[in-house]
Length: 220
Image (cartoon, rainbow, N blue to C red; front, side, top):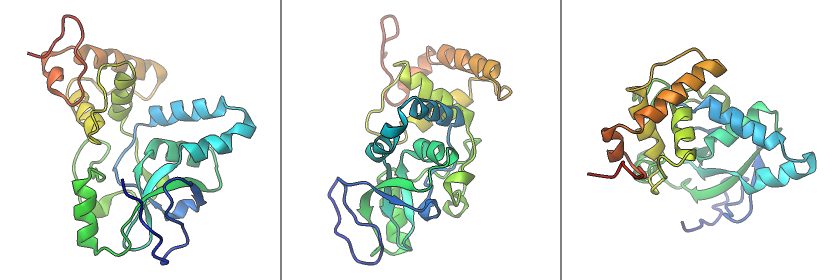
């Protein structure tokens, strides 16, 4: 993606190669829910790092954002890292600017974001809602356990990200229709994950984005 030059209307330099640190209040989510088990897993992996290595890691894995027309920074990747770092109390958010849309009208901004697959206005139940109802902060993003299931199923090699931002959401929606929601406990999630793997072997799963065929389970 091409880099954008700084328009001078904001304090953040638009430099894809150099992450910077900004107040959390500037960030605006572009998806309506996240998988909180995935957030906890990322937090655990971060805490395994030596304290002196954590800031550099956060900068390397910086939250991908774009400048919006009003000056806010809209998160386009790493929502889960954002929530993990926020919950752990990082005083500022490590970000990397992808694009500068400060010169766009709101209509141009929404059209461009939609075309690039950077908007997912669906709540924690998978229901679509107006863009105006997207969470106003990283802290306010609700939990969708089916997104966590999709993330762990992907980690296990059931599917890959084919370059389509919505692949994980398609899998989460599929699992939502095949896995019973259980209490938010370790046992409850373990049962859901077992059912998710069973569902991933169903014939219709092979039609989902990024599905990885295995021996005995090939595309028709």
